[in-house]
Length: 229
Image (cartoon, rainbow, N blue to C red):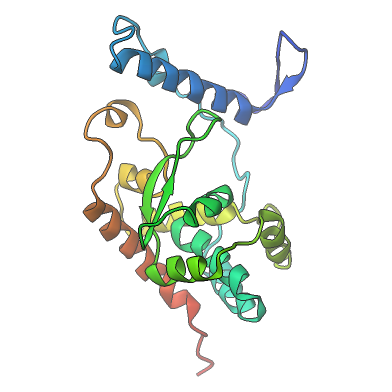
């Protein structure tokens, strides 16, 4: 999208944020894709595949780096176990906060399965989760709400630093370890773009696991206390 300004819905007169417009375009793109690939209306074109309707809002959330990860790992030491587990799942998977509830519904050890949402399919798929965190979450049987996690992150005193920021941090680490873009999209449960969303049925488990483990190995040392030597 070429503007960060809100638009006006001609039907209601209400303003529409760029994110809402992007979600609606995602929904229309998905509906056209199903119509074409299912054979219901194969003659249709999908114009949404040839335009960039992503918002141009920059720095909507702070992108955490090593100091933020180290701070949070240290801060979590005094928090209840369910808070520790939930925050670490966000940090090690980059999943949306709303995706945590689906972890408890995923019976396959070491995996998080996200169904397609109702806002245009922003996230969908299955991704690896460190087995110790997956097991701990299922042992606890509950995970805290986003409000609790965001209050904890506010203690850092940084603007736009919320639980969703770990999603941005995960993408940054994916780039640092050299993952190709579509693999990092798959690990973040983003729908793949263009023809990649139609052919190949996503990524098999092996490259997902190998990619995730590269990210985990980059983050794991930040859990350790820095030496004063």
